[in-house]
Image 1 (cartoon, rainbow, N blue to C red):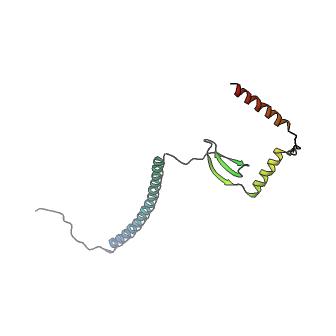
Image 2 (cartoon, rainbow, N blue to C red; image 1 turned 135 degrees about the vertical axis):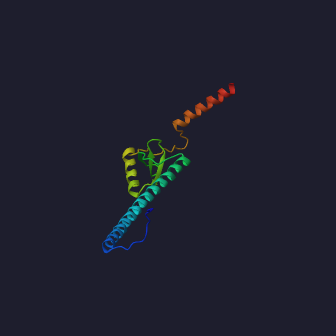
Length: 154
């Protein structure tokens, strides 16, 4: 007589039924935990992907424009003649920003000019009397006559 084993339906007893219920509850909890981990990992990966794409775009832009942004030391220069304030790059000496001076800055600039220049002494203009010729004019006339005579001789 030959023997074989087959898988056939069998009724579960109460103990087996309770075990199956516990297994289902545990599996449902495990699936919820795994799905939460999946969301966290997916979210983290999405953030990493977004960061990588932003870096890629920035690097491609630098290549296209052949330049990048860096911190460069700049120095303020107050132009008391034009009454403006310029910011100058110290590596290339280019003006990177310029603005008009404020009223206070203009007042300080004018005050500084007065202190540096000091009082100006101006001689009163001399008006020659009728027939009087200033000494400079005499000198200039003599030079002019000499120049005319030298040109005529040549």
